Length: 237
Image (cartoon, rainbow, N blue to C red; front, side, top):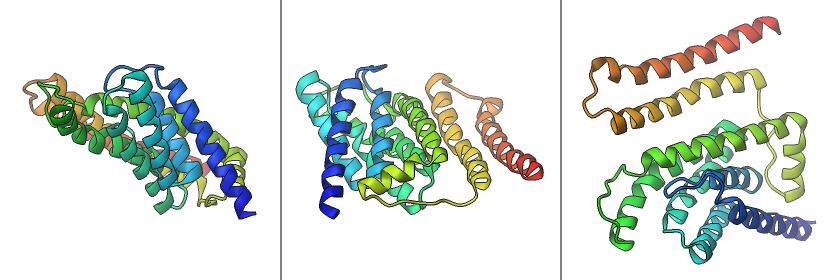
């Protein structure tokens, strides 16, 4: 039984690697590859952090070899894939945390590490520590949203747990769906907060007090939205 599951897991990973390489040019510009994050989160949820890391590593190497992609193919994938799988596991199956792991791992950690890699190894000039943060965050939000929506629908229909069981991966039942969705809305406020900070720092040279307050208003709006969503739907239930 374990042997069959191992073979199924390796076959699934091989399929994800092939799909990841083929669809990677979709919406791609340098420093932004949304489809890579779709694959990362999908692998993280189905296979766990270590397989997701290896999958992202192989896809990155193949893209560098056959598509002449710079090392961003690696720095913009492997950290997010691992952190996505790890946070999904630590949260006991919360898809939101898989999404956040990709945003933080790639959009922040991978983007910052890309600076010394591209400067000292690839010989690129004129970069800074946060140069790739805006494009990396934008890419993770696009690809991550696609993965989150797809996996959420599979979770509601019961397909997600069936696939995980067939692959021999950990299957999580989760808690209250209403509570999970409400927390998800609130926690997305922190992602929106980070995105707002990045956008303001990138496009507003000298932000005033009013502009600096926007990030707090965005965060508060999402938290309030989560509370209202929980309260309204709980009353209906």
